[in-house]
Image 1: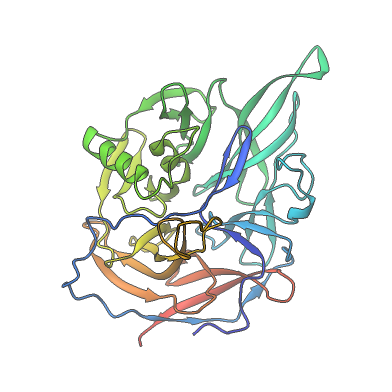
Image 2: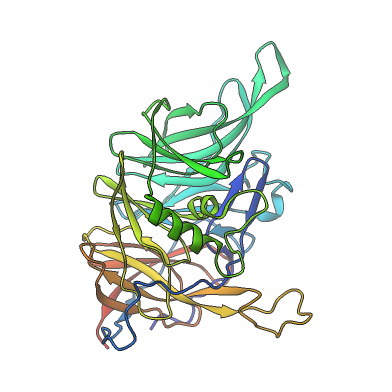
Length: 402
């Protein structure tokens, strides 16, 4: 059982911060349908294991004013990456301004240091801000950003807003900045060990998302079609289901799903997970879908994300939705799932990638459990701000039998 002194005083924004050119808003989660690939109710399930938590390691970073956005990643060295606004009270209304409190990506390293991946100044640009969409490859960190391009003949005049990808090594040293071509509206990204970059770019005119493969300098190599018509239909129906969680007046449901999807490396490829809706996992390479994997989730559960791991298995954070009192309860019972629901992680489930079969279950039974971030070296790493001051803590945990 986790020590009761560990809880979550700082603010976690569940899921992702979905950032478009003029909008950065955290999204509420709605109850979503069970996957057709879930384990039948008459199929025996593995007995859930418990976790033994080690003492927390505290970092000199974070406060009770911090906001942590739940898009966690890690690397093979054991560093944990997360998007954070260190002091939300100092942010300008639109999240811009480039001040030290602006949201950025940081890494918490095994040595106890905090490595920032903050927007870097660039000649010809100003007001560069992180969009909090990022990808950690085996050697680099790719951060999606946006900035105003200055008229070279008049430094007071802005001629347009451009999207950038700033690339860092794992020590936080910038290695290059890629200026994306005009007209792209990226909502998610991934990268391969070759340096090629996968961009999910919103196409508002055609109400879809274009998936582009760029070379390591940002030049377009190809446009991918990740889905056959059958899978596209399933994705679109799931995205539109259950009170329109993925619906928006601005973008189509499938594009919203892809913008909120989790992307992590898997060997030479990339795994795409649709967050909080049970759809097949997609393994991608530079040419498209390598394979789809339907996970045999326990009945009644929904996947939140896959954890980066080093054992070849798929470690999924899964949970259930619990009712939340609607802001307007007129005609709606309090706590109705029909209005709104909050996702609560309940376990980590481990699956074979060959067929999606369930190998073991690990219970997350504490009332205020920390956030699982990584599965490396036979243990899980959790994140939890310290109760008294909000300083970030990492806690290692190993599975034990009941």
